[in-house]
Image (cartoon, rainbow, N blue to C red; front, side, top):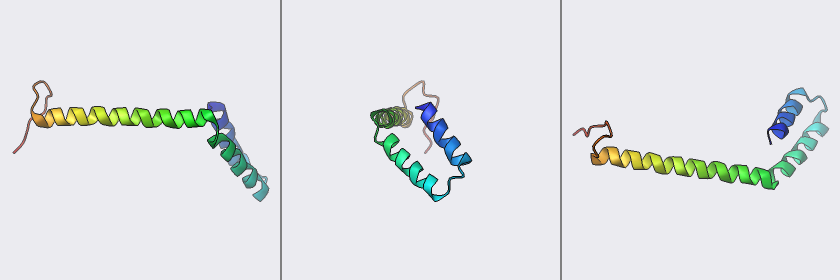
Amino acid sequence: MGAVIGVFIGYVLGTRAGPEGWVELKRSLKVIASSDEAKDIVATGFSVVRDLLGRGSEILSGALGGESGSGLRRVA
């Protein structure tokens, strides 16, 4: 997938094909976006973010609940 992104960036930065080049680029992006690999990458990203948010909320609720060892103190 990294190679595809590299080709895309190179094409965008180096293109001199005019409007036809942009039409071709849009077509290529649709193919990439509909690929199973791209869908897996997006799903994995959402899963990681959901996990991080869950851990963050656990840490925050523990800190606000006054669990010992958290290093945070309740104010007011």
